[in-house]
Image (cartoon, rainbow, N blue to C red):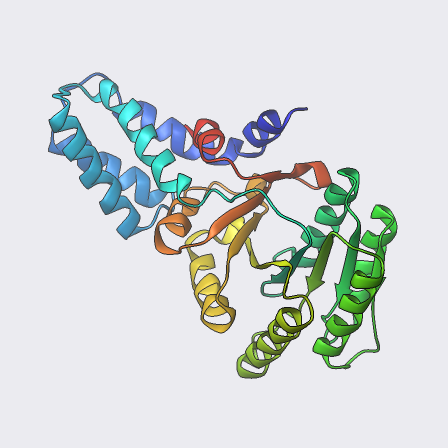
Length: 298
């Protein structure tokens, strides 16, 4: 199955929720305030968020007036263009090597699983990958990462439960340098009940990376669970304040009808949407493409 086919299949719930609703309002009737009110309701109920919805409606009104569009069905192409434009700002550049990903996110979003899938993806592309098990707070995290490392046939650097995570990252970087690595993937703790300590921990890890690997392309990527929709934005804001995020990846989009919240992410944060997860396998972790995403939900 090709990337677009996987994305299209994975976004079926969002397409059914969002695309089907649009069918009822893009019916060839006159373009009037009733149409825009109905569209506003559809966008908000599809988890686009209030501010993003207002922006889309304002743009659609302005462009349809400029292009002298009078019928609702002639407006759908304009809507698609606006959505693609919003998401294009979040399209990431190609990676350069050596490259480090510090992967963040609250517990349960699929952070460690995403790292495992990335390890498999990069090794399949011929890259030399090292994993750093820097979530030393959760006892099962290292074990889970080792399972993925064995699947991908890559090295994982671990240490005892409770050890300073920055020390694990330091050891991982030394191994990375010695082996001439291409990609270093750092798993981090996701606990939020002790937020201040966690954020200081993440800042310390970041300082170690920047000191020991100044030449590497450094990504601070937060993982969010697609089934939480708009609620994920507060998590992104929290981690962004702590470490100045660069990237977002979204898991479990195949299990939700709330895929519209990606528009809010792209609009509210100056971050790249790096990957979207639409299934259980490593192949279901797909590089984000704005046009393909909009095609999959409309």
